[in-house]
Image (cartoon, rainbow, N blue to C red; front, side, top):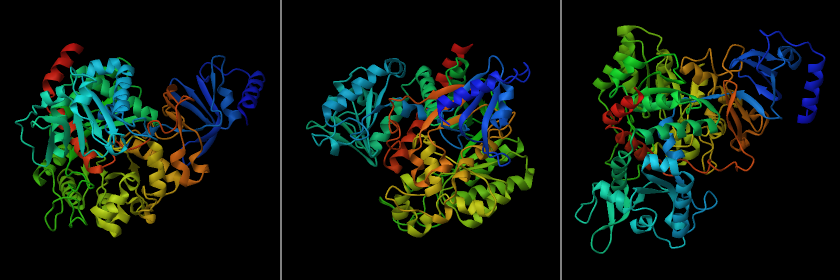
Length: 612
């Protein structure tokens, strides 16, 4: 029914119904649009009553209206579909804030940069609009320029960026991610001058006298990021945490994850949450090889102001699309200078893997493990089996993160070991063509992120975004999990396409189980938190090929609206592209950001001193 008729009906109903008792009265009643509960026992509902941030009742409108009291708010969905708030199966909330706090330097249609002057103006406009953030961060970063789209057909130079600021370091990133431009202040911080030799795997472009002109290629560029980002103090880092959490909320997430976190990042989250600036819940997983003592002292299933340490993160290998994931066979056609039979490599030894897994099993702590290649999964499976043989199953719900390349026997092993698999089907859209043509070839590319194999075995799974490598775009995840279409329109692995209802579970109730929160989140049921997302359309009632066009209209955390789309905001405003168009550079950039937090102790001490 229309919004007006709906409100009239509710008003009339209220006049003819006695007021609910104080004990039964709801704070809010949601109705007026399709409600998808993600509860198999009661898949849909007409209305939901909420009290004290939790769901009081779910069901038919007539039954739910019995909970209407004098102070009950009637929340009209106005035709929008309501689902449980999305639960992040894997991402990096804090570093996602860097993406949210960067200037958009894309060319039309995704941005307005057409020449050097408009690029400079875009940076100035962004600085003006984000003055507080710039002052706190002390760094200016822009993403997405493309010299091929500029009228001058050249890269900007340090002089072009010096016209913006000579006091603050500025770094702008080419859309490919293979290179960037630094202003003079950045070059000073990094120590690049006419006498600096090009680093291995990189190039410093120069002026006639040998001085850097600001354009830095490959590892000359990635090496710049670490010292620049180390200029950030605790206040700026905390702003990343705030911006990241708000970006997650914008895509319908009411629970985010900070995978491969650090003690410093968690304390930044806690500080901002204590000030009421983190709108969503965040579960952090510090690196088990770097922060074991911190994990042991802080791990908890209970939130403090919406923040908790859920366990630890282990990273075995690197990026499949960057050819650094450890395979069990050679890469198909790797782009770069690789020896014959190259299979990638592990980032850690089997002894380190076993030690980390044993520590988590001995202490009953959840471990989530970044493992992309088949060779990395062989290492993880062996370590998990050995730990279970020694300590038994502590019920710690170990999770595989990514699992891009897997064999079917490995899926069987993960099922036997009780491993929750958080897969990355969004890769089929952004980088599926790359996998087909270069990493694993057309045959094996069909089985990346093999959701079909899991469903055939009765296993549940999570679908994630790994932001900031890609945006935390829940609808892009949903679309990719269902359609598995690449950017070129190819369908990569039709056997692994799933229906919309299943894909929604991989965004809600299943990752809630992954985080030990299935009793509070992931479905709309009485007793659970009133965490909701409102969509422009019912995703189960439209052509699956149009799922990526569904908009996030509002995000609600415990009965409070934490994000609402404005009419003037275009749908594509922050959905134009992934973090970087090139997957190798996206991985390298994220790695550089992690390296930049290596000197965290002084910042952490400063932060803790300020909080005492």
